[in-house]
Length: 140
Image (tube, rainbow, N blue to C red; front, side):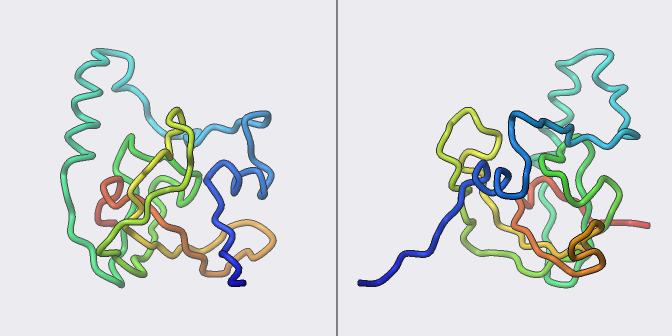
């Protein structure tokens, strides 16, 4: 009998690395500006939507970073570059099965590599899958 690979949802993966709803941590960096949320929230929503729908074409070897206000994972940090390892023709849909999750059916079409910044594995190149709509070209 052929054994099926073990597919983890985002929630299961976070639980395995010690993060869960019982120990919530902000995805925002302490220095991330949120001034646009102090005024017209409707304008901030429209701006985030415009950023999300502004497409960039990426290729392996490109350096990218989060678009402002669109970071939905802990890594990479805002302003930290990541290298494009692969652009998937067919996105992998996150297997999170709860519609209330921010990861529910998220189209993960970008494989990014980054330098891990904590132990164990500090300094190693690691890769994660992401939604390319949330990224822009990185500039120093």
